[in-house]
Length: 542
Image 1 (cartoon, one colour):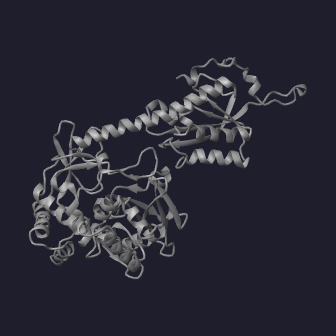
Image 2 (cartoon, rainbow, N blue to C red):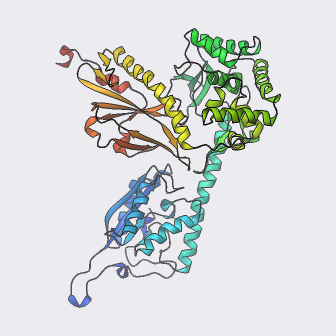
Image 3 (cartoon, rainbow, N blue to C red):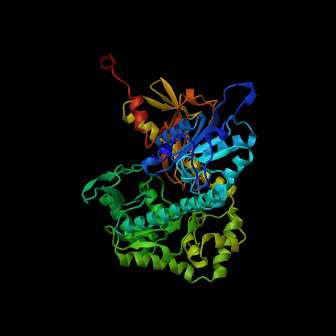
């Protein structure tokens, strides 16, 4: 590696070089005491870049660099699996900056593999700013693998600025390439995330197009070359979707009436929940039911704010999947939905929205779609450019507290169903499990107790996802099951199984990626819990 390949003698820099001994701390030369080595911290970062940038390889190279120059590494700051686009989420770098600013460091030098490991900030000045904070505190930053000494000379400053700009440009180019690659996959008919929906299933295929099997809810592909496509679900679900379209188009039933009929027949949605006007409406407007693959409705690039894209920016592949309904029937349904708002003027639509806002005190797509006699949320979005613009025209500013109330109300409705699923799963695997109706704790085999916590997903202004948990420590369950909801707070994303012995706080904050001490308890499903709880016959145990 270039980092360890520099001569162990006096380093030569672009600006003419400097003797390594000038960077050491000395006692008074007249005392005759031996010199003390320079104390340094190393900072390493890896996202998903090439193997050469693994934190282990960076650390090894930095160690060689330090040993060749008589530098003692006394502390390591490591951000593993972290993007270099922003400082948010890079806990180690933030901690380094905090330590430097507080004056609590026991080192005077920070060693970094190269400029890109410090960060691929889109604004080169941001990268320079964090280095300036260190320099202002008397702590130098050295880039071990670069062919220049970071000594503040004009040439090193110029080269470093170019390197910073190149690091940011690399991320932009990579983002463009990834976007183009995803677009090509969409055009070929491959599915890019999201649940299949009622009447459809996600099917896994290999690189040659051979079917490997169905993916259940929450399951993901494990081989990079595999692809996911949408296929028709069970015949009874497909017939039901077609029946929804016929009832809406040919028989004139409203979404509310269709939902009531399905609930009376005891038919749940694909998520196991009762039907609502909104869920029926989503089936009637979603293009996947006509076989079209649509992507890029919303963008979230380079950690910038998520935006709603104009239709001309969408990537579309027609007839990518087997259609559930004929295109004529789909278009007829869309025409009927569009006509409901078309006959209304802008002011009439806004008046209805304003009245709904006065009645409910808040607005959202769900609130609008669940209201009889209202144009759909998609109609408002189409007519006024976006829902946010429609909200602003009636004097409503979306507030996190409002959404919090609405989402929490829905999550409270989900909790009994999730608890029921846990009980059913335990009992199906042979465990004796029952619910304490007063505390909602689940007692398993008379041996240990469980508690279920549903964690609401919160999107930060920067687009990052967070889950804030509060545990009822008074229940003292032996295992707490944390159900982390997806970004839409509609379905479980994954599960955490926290033993009581490791519950050190009644509050916990989770990000998309967490330290090993937390993510070691993360699972895609609850199979492990069911396996652990399954009673073992005495003869087998012996």
